[in-house]
Length: 232
Image (cartoon, rainbow, N blue to C red; front, side, top):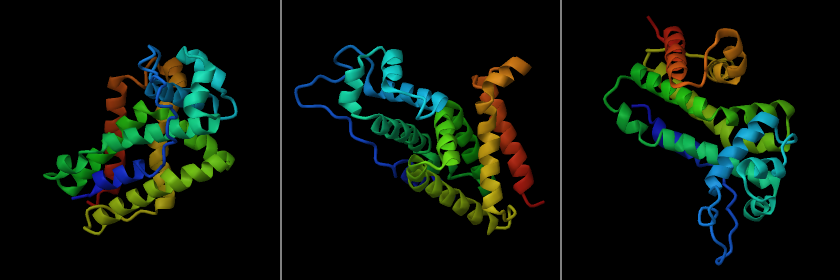
């Protein structure tokens, strides 16, 4: 069996989420009747993904969250820490997505296992495409934040997928691939559809993020890549 669940969880949990600051006597956001920190992190992720780090300020996030700006400063201190917390929050969802994957894969052959992993990853990317936007923004610019992203998440993820592909290739069921070409191509195939959702809506009249379109895209990703990888 592909031991992907435990490994994926380790990748997702590799980053250290900046702890939310709260003194003993201070009520939690949820107790104050305002959005919980999780909701703020979800919103911050969307705004950072849309506007980039430099194009985002805490005032924007506070306004859209409907909370006072000092409250966000209190809990996250700086924009940098809020950004890191938002990214780590999204990667924690990746861990949850694959938490039980080994149990789900146990009775499947290795090709079927790969199809499940590809499909599940596509679903995750559809629901969390903002974090992909953030990674691309930072890596392309070569920022200090990119170094943190690469070391903490991207390189461990590449190592994981390389191991999965090599394990199946050793059985002779799929061809060996050059990860330097294959992994960026896979990322682009999965995430490009969601990144271009606005243009696709205008041109083709579809909602790329709808359940129907996400399912269709996931099946296309599985079909295209496994058809190419599979040894006849």
